[in-house]
Length: 455
Ligand SMILES: *Cc1c(COP(=O)(O)O)cnc(C)c1O
Image (cartoon, rainbow, N blue to C red):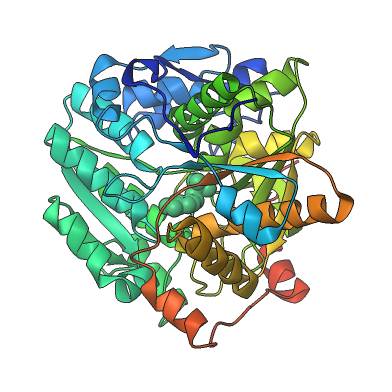
């Protein structure tokens, strides 16, 4: 058999023409979003003040498997897609594993991550609806950057609430966003009611995604012609990110490779939900089986230590309730260096798939994550984002297991982005000053106690 190439690129006309909606193939669907006042499922009309119309339609659609990608979005995709699927020959060699390792690299665009796949879709639908602008939150800054790029392209105003610890750790991220025309505010701020009350309740807090979401929602609903957009967690975002999995599926098919294990990091679940989409579809339809592993930080372990319960998506409790694996909307994780994975909850779709035993989860400590990042950078050349390095850690652990068991399994992981803006984190690691904070059971019990009581 011919040697599998290092890089497999699809051609531009092989970019998928539809996104794939996993929920259509789920027999037991994710629980619906609830209105926190009435505890009834949120209707499109109720969501209308917060979200764009077409995105609400996608959010609530659990029956249509394939949703066509509008031509304007597909041509934007052509600027940076298809992304390569890379065979990690050098990493395999360094590990001495009989396993084959492949990764789908999403860091080949200026935002440096997969977030642009959904940002461009959301900005497009906002523009089509005739809106003036959008508001959002950003943790590590990748989503804010992706959205400001997309808004610049479609001439939309973009207001970003950036988690304060990232705002301070990553001043250059802020400048990239401002270069694309976004207005960036550190969160919690004093510019919103909810920001002021969070600051009063937690003086000196360095913020969290949950806080920033509350602020961004308030900023949207109090402004004419604005809507709120979110970079992860929601079904619509998983839908747009399915482009990652569809391309991966097609590239592997062309290579004649069937994966055994698929690994991705999980913050709100969008890249993982996107990567696994077509594979999970086959699993749900009984056509194939794969091991699927979600990797999260031990400091913010939603799947592995969270509760599967209805909770607020944000700290300020302005958002609808979602049934998901959650650490509690009041949980503020320690300021670890994978900003994009510091979210208290998880996609409701992935939560339901996990509850049904269709996927696994692993929690990994920060120092071991950076050890994997360093090994990857030195062998494969790409400097990974700390978030992505969570997936690398578990892919490497799986490859080492294969070595021990002398098994030639095929491992595919999502390399969601590059880490050029994470040099403070790498510096801490290189100086041997990285800490591995893990919340205690008491910490978690305190925030579980604040979960809304819903049967
Ligand atoms: C945001 C982000 C993540 C985590 O978000 P998901 O929605 O779980 O995918 C992972 N990697 C990178 C590089 C990110 O920017």
